Length: 116
Ligand code: AMP
Ligand code: ZN
Image 1 (cartoon, protein in one colour):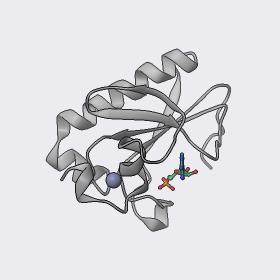
Image 2 (image 1 turned 120 degrees about the vertical axis):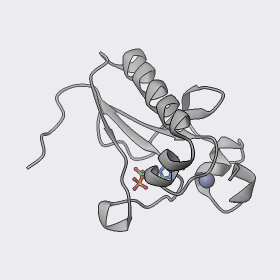
Image 3 (image 1 turned 90 degrees about the vertical axis):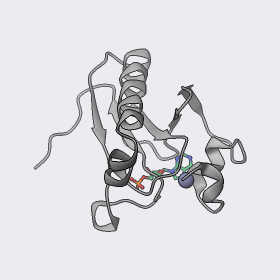
């Protein structure tokens, strides 16, 4: 599925440049932009340019694409921080997913809170 297959998707519109975003890095296949409501000193969203609803669908269809999203996130974490980070893919509404274009939350910068 390509970006143009999901005309109502917010992140497809960011990929297409139709909605502004604070883009920090991009590759041929993925884009990294700052979260509009940051939860950590560095809070960047890393998404494939193609539309997949969530990470299992993305992994099943394009495992190399998933690897490239992780590589882009790793590079951004070194650029904007010290290379230590947390990567989160919220999957499903109960897990907090609100935008159904797969994206990793890259959280970094300082001491991150532990899980209970
Ligand atoms: P999730 O809840 O895992 O689907 O993550 C969606 C994230 O997108 C949230 O952390 C929002 O703050 C963020 N977000 C929503 N709209 C925008 C936008 N226009 N630009 C950047 N981040 C956004
Ligand atoms: Zn999309």
